[in-house]
Length: 580
Ligand SMILES: Nc1ncnc2c1ncn2[C@@H]1O[C@H](COP(=O)(O)OP(=O)(O)OP(=O)(O)O)[C@@H](O)[C@H]1O
Image (cartoon, rainbow, N blue to C red; front, side, top):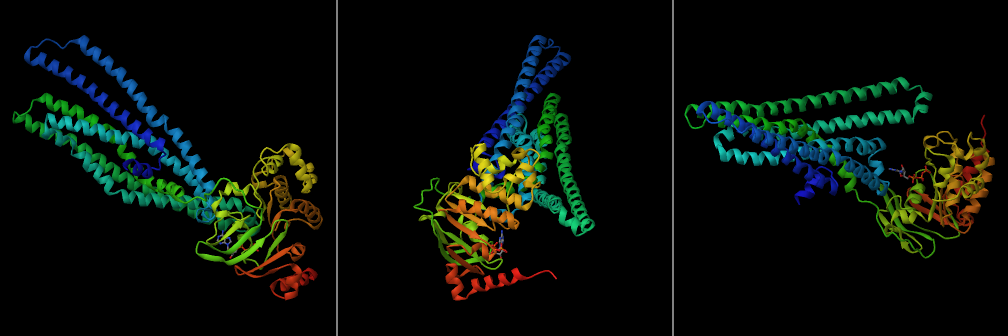
């Protein structure tokens, strides 16, 4: 129970908890070994005092020297173990944590990414994990080890002389009490600093992504002023936070050190009243320096531990969000996609309500409707990129919410409006469609999607890197690459969202040819704004305000004179529209 709470509090993996225990164990050993060293010093002083005051023989030098050598060796070995347990093991922990966060993000429904943007999530995987790394390596093992070793030493001191023990140790709980009492303030400032840092990253990311629009609209100065303001705010809250933490940490450190003064005062009183001898006070003064040392180190870090709570919470939030799980085997009976009274809301905004239709295998089903009517949402739900909030979607009779998204998507090819490309070569970007596809298969798919011609013009042909998200390609070229990917994958279900929107007329005709090869015999769900693109569809579903307004073959819909017919007529009119 303690272990689970502890693990969650510091966002540790199972192995991380074991590492902290190891670190604490070695810290206790190190502190006790150092105390052992103090004891040698004490014995030496005790022997010498005996020689001076009571004419006793000099302490045995060979024995003391032997003890010093044993102490040095023990000290070296235990420090090494402590170093490895606290610093060495933490790098594995950082690696495992980043991987497990990334793995978790990979499985989260897309809706989650609307709540936390890219800069925010990157900050968690990089910044928050970095901060926790410091806590895992510099704080936890040392601090918990210091608690334990101090408890052991405190018991010994209390047995020796409880009055001096209290005079010596009272500052420790008071100093920690002060820090614990103010941890909410530290956590609040840390949260403010984090938010300010994310606003700066967001601002920079936005500026880089939209540099073209910012220049085109002459907004550079205004934009930079906004960014400067965010950077200034970040600086201000960071300084405030550091100052606040500094005040509490230094106050705690001073309070703890007051223990030296009280030990001397109480000790002097006890010596004067003849209750203890000077050597006992000397022993306590020796011990006190060692008791404070590990805490002194931890006091500054304990403040870091409090502010790290914000980072741990942000990491836990990712771990706590339910992932889209399901059976790893997907064996549908055929590939009909059946929407049954599907409702869906982004956050609280309902965008689909009671949507029912079936996209049959071997047919092209087109989704049409005014902008914002929910067409893209339907396509995303059909691939379980989001989960429906009402009703169900079945593929070949299997409810897709019971299937692992990864297993499900092996049967889908998708060509969406927003094509995602990677900073890799053209060849590898197309090969993503089918893991392990040969170069020849990739080339054949590229030719079929009418990519061959522009790829030949690239400086290194198929081996040309295309830049971040395909920045070196035109919109039409990017879209053709994504069609080539789909052709290569050759999955039984094809989702097309405005697949040919960025193509010129000549290219569009060529790609339409490639698409008809891709679509033959498959379950096809097409979203298209242009009515002529869907005129050849087998079934049309017309959406309006998230509901099915009408559905049927193109001819049936033209006949009944509803929204579809109005849209067709409107588009024919606009096709005749000319500039001037
Ligand atoms: N990620 C999102 N978060 C919140 N709301 C969204 C999101 N995506 C879409 N919406 C909203 O859901 C509604 C349906 O959007 P959707 O993209 O499905 O419509 P669409 O018919 O495909 O539109 P278009 O033809 O313009 O692409 C719209 O009101 C849109 O603002």
